[in-house]
Image 1: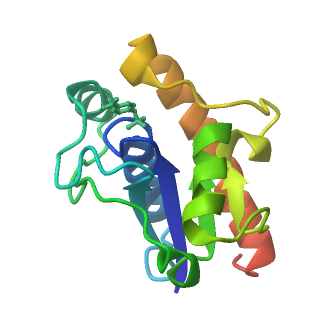
Image 2 (image 1 turned 90 degrees about the vertical axis):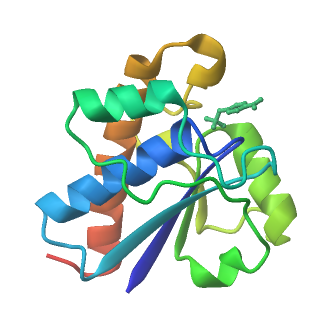
Image 3 (image 1 turned 180 degrees about the horizontal axis):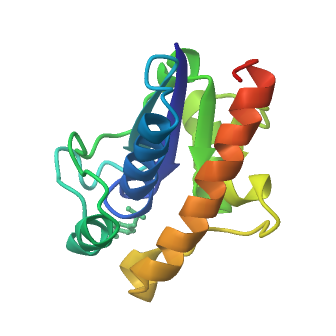
Length: 155
Ligand code: 4NP
């Protein structure tokens, strides 16, 4: 199994959105037996919490299941468990380096560096724009799946 972890600051807006979206993509591509997905926060603020209502609303709008989304914090041991650890922004990526103790490790990637956008995923907790975030995460998830297909020889 190839394990993917999406990480943001709170694990209630962006990374659970990415987890649900990527899982939906895996189902549609018949890859749930090869690739697994989870999400986590760099902070401890929302451990055990459901996603933000804005994230739940956008998932509902696009008919994507929110099942299994619950806030948890990134732990040092996650570095060994996961093959791809994907930060939503530069600050998340730096915090992942610190928590895992693996600065600049190639398995730790800022999501939109896999796309032509090459920027942070805006945090809708502050912008209020869940639609913009959804579009960018959707682009990022597609690019990530392509990268995984190539690197892991999945056709
Ligand atoms: P997220 O957004 O990192 O995309 O989940 C945030 C969620 C909560 C807070 C900040 C950002 N907060 O300050 O509680």
